[in-house]
Length: 250
Ligand SMILES: Nc1ncnc2c1ncn2[C@@H]1O[C@H](COP(=O)(O)OP(=O)(O)OP(=O)(O)O)[C@@H](O)[C@H]1O
Ligand SMILES: [Mg+2]
Image 1 (cartoon, helix red, strand yellow):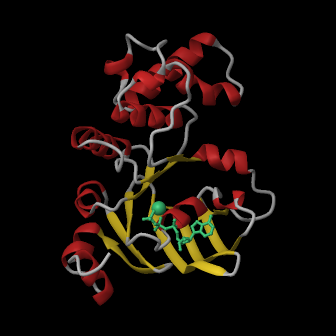
Image 2 (cartoon, rainbow, N blue to C red; image 1 turned 135 degrees about the vertical axis):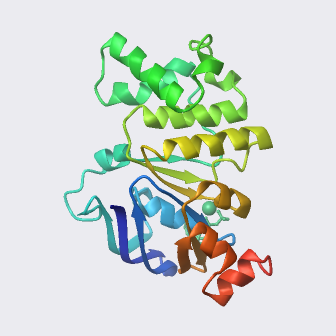
Image 3 (cartoon, rainbow, N blue to C red; image 1 turned 90 degrees about the vertical axis):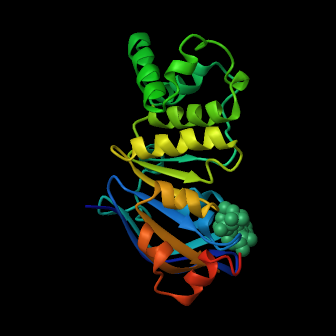
C-alpha cells in the first residue's frame, strides 16, 4: 500500500524554485533512497514530507503530499502530530547533552508520559530496536555525549522510535560515520524496514544499492527517474540518470 503519495509538488525559496512538479509514491514498509548531486533538492524534498520546510519564512509550497491518504498541507493539519508520525534523523548525530536514558525518554515525556515504569520500558524497547541496547544498558545514566559517533546516531534513531513514528526520514545519516558504524546503521535500516517506511538521502550509491528497495534520482530540482533500485542502477531509462550513476558528473 502507498504510505506517501506526492503530486505536483513545487517548492520555492523566495523567487528561487528548488523543486519542480515532483510526483512520487512510496510504499509502506519500504526503503526509498534519494540520490543526486549537491544542491539538487534532496534535503528540501525530504523536509517537505514532515513540513520541516515550513519553518523557513521564505518557503512557498504548492501541490500535494498525502500520507495515509491525508494531505499534510491541508489547513487544520496538526503539525506536531505529523512530526511525531514522520520523524527525522540528521547528518550529524545531535543527542541532547543529557543521559542516554533522558535522550530517549524526552519525547514520550513531552507527549505526556509520566509513568516511570512505562518510560523505562519505552527506553529499553527503543534502544533494542535501534540496535544499541547491549552497548549502553550499563551506562544509561551517563552522558550521551560520551558515546561514539555511530552510537550517538543510533541513539538519535532510538529517540525517534520512542515517540512511535511510522515514517523515518534520514538525511545522509552515515556521512559523518566510520565504515563500521555505517555498516551498523545500514543493517539497522534493513531491520527497521519491517515496521517503518524509510526515506534516506545518500551520496553513496553503494549504500543506496545496499539498503533501498527503490531509488529516486534528482537533478536541479527535478525528479528525473524513480525505479526499483537494481533497475535504476543497471538499466536506467534516462540518459541523465545513466550519466550520473556512471560518474560522468556530480
Ligand atoms: N534555506 C534555504 N534558503 C534558500 N535556498 C535554499 C535553502 N535551502 C536550500 N536552498 C537551495 O535549494 C536548492 C536545493 O538544496 P538542498 O539542500 O535541498 O540540496 P541537496 O540535494 O540536499 O544538496 P546536498 O547534497 O549538498 O545536501 C539549492 O540550490 C540550495 O541552495
Ligand atoms: Mg542535503
